Structures are given as C-alpha cells and as structure tokens.
Length: 137
Image (cartoon, rainbow, N blue to C red; front, side, top):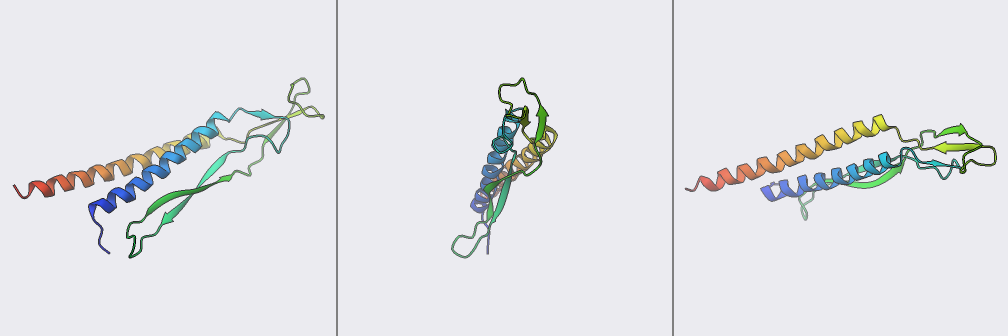
C-alpha cells in the first residue's frame, strides 16, 4: 500500500485526537485527586486510557490510533479515621481517591511529548509538500 501526505495527516491527526483526550482524562484525575467519600465504593478512582490501533486495509488504507475506552484503577483507596467529618461513615472513616499525582504528572508529560511529536510529523509533511511544489518552479 502506498501512503500519501493526506494519509500522514490523518494518522497523525488520530494520534493528536487520542492524546488530547488522554490529557483531558489526566486533568480529570488530577482535579479529583483530593476528593473524599464516606464509602469505599463511591470514592473517585483514577481512570486510565486504553488505546487501540486503527489498522489500515485496502478500502481504508489509513491507520492510526484511537482512545478506545477508559479503565478504572484498582489501586487501593486510602481509609482515614475522622469521626468528626460530615462525610464519615457509621464507623467514622472517610475514603480518599486513589489518584497518584506523581503518576498523573508523568502521564501528562508523556502525553504532551506524544502530542508534540505528532505535531512535528505534520509540520515535516507540510514542509515536504511545500518543497515538492517548489520543484516545479
């Protein structure tokens, strides 16, 4: 299969879209990092992206990547004894989110780098197209 410049734009565009959605997911995790609940089942749990390859075929030769869905982190939540807290359960415990801010920051840096790399791919493709067009002059 041959790949034209429009294919490069579509493939990189799919990666930009996936990483943009990944960054939004990370931002949501970070925003909920300090949330608490009176129930272990109701406390916010970090979400992780599940990426999927988009395979090209003869009908649609472009490939790419998509953010297929999110998975819920099964890391344990923290339980703290605070009987005076208004959200404490009948035993006096509150539960805090299992979001790890260090992991989220690492994920944000990784997603940002991936996003930037795909912007560079698109810029390189644009430059190649521009050089190709100037060959005729």
